[in-house]
Image (cartoon, rainbow, N blue to C red; front, side, top):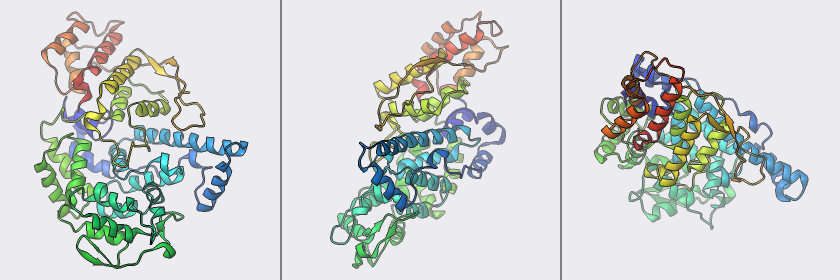
Length: 465
């Protein structure tokens, strides 16, 4: 796989940006990615969803009795709009000229987890998604302050139940364990005292807010500092700790480049992150430009979104409904807005179990044979997670290749674009599909090259970037 194709996948979701990377260079491509415009309009699907606390109260009254027609309709619309929100995000990802921001939104979405299934308010889930988009390349310290004080987060991590005399430690624990420092860099006492500082931080109109009646204003000691602290203070103290840069740096390296990054790399880039005062844009620019110069292909398993969007881009499928992609992701264990737990999707080998590999091959076979899952993949069920109705329909597919090239040239062209290495056995198999006397201008040439591409997608090497 050539460098431009490899990094088009790593910085996006397909090979669509490879020519631009090749023509303007990685550093300029990154700078254009950081400053590319992004969508700031509310998705149409949320127009009727409750947004204020009073609207939410009215909604809950409606659905309290789900046997009533009004209650059934309200609940049905909420579930439908939750699915529509997933589709909206997929479409945002697909239309980007510079998709790195959306890939970073997905990273943060899996770092600051707050699931739709538990939060149950589409507007709050969207608010989180927008904040991550707006701050995708900004300051890690500031983003942490923002995210732990959103309605979605205080609901998801039960801080609405955290009050003086009845402390809930969930948000305090995950702030240290999963969002910033990682296990081994704090004590149970820090968690308990952090929870006291967060007591009373509950739901507000646009963001979480403290309610004096529930606050715990005791003096506490937190990571060696003593005082009367609130949420922002906790974050500031955390970011003074010596090990603060390494958890997030390791996760960024795993998300984009290495399933198992070397600790010396984690420390090297983590130390740099501290010197730039936790500015994520500066860190990404350094990581990507320096790692681009290395031979690192094959060091990471594609996540399901990278896999399916690469397939649709390579086959030039334009009419695929986003609902189909949403369904495929759910089948692969990457349900948007619904990670399995607060740790998020683990990635790595978890993306390539025997069952998931078979599902990927089946999806490739289906698409390469010009068959698609019906656009009505989701019925209007009233139960979140109910399986959609599926049927098949014909779609137009096409692979780009040089019509003047020989069989070996086309094999190399596709290999360079889609796999990081080709062994002798695979090469012979590909030459069996595209024989020595292959005529690239023949009427059936397109079908033959698609068969070759289908074979390539089934290789273990295709699963890696």
